[in-house]
Image (cartoon, rainbow, N blue to C red; front, side):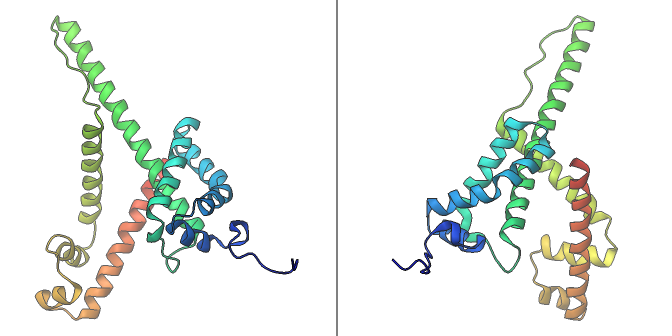
Length: 209
């Protein structure tokens, strides 16, 4: 065998992006190589967010399950594989952190209600509503409220184009026609608004880290 010959199918010799392509083709050896390359970094990130090793390990598992199931969604033009994985891990970890806080607030509120009921001699305080469905609903509501607050803080002209896009389902061309604005103006306002929203949400995430 020629020692200089390449082995393109050897996962260790492939780029990160090539590994993701193979994962999308359901190649488990490619997923294993990605795990070996990025698991330590992603686990450290999850532990920093969650301050709990067991939770961080579960997040790490969720990240690679998502990669296995949705590897075809990776877009090399938008980010590197490392950035893509970090964003997935951060999102999963923050979701878990917020879910944990919802549970803690629910237990705290229930304990306070039970304490008040005991002091007044009443009973019948129910169990806290901490089912997965209830937690998910609370979390989704909190997300929507946060986005609405950030939307309300935008300049009126920027908020207008986002409202028309998100709530009326209009394209930028349709927004320009309806609002009587040049298409370039609509695009500029939309870009500025989205950048402000992204920055606002990024700052909130950093406060959790």
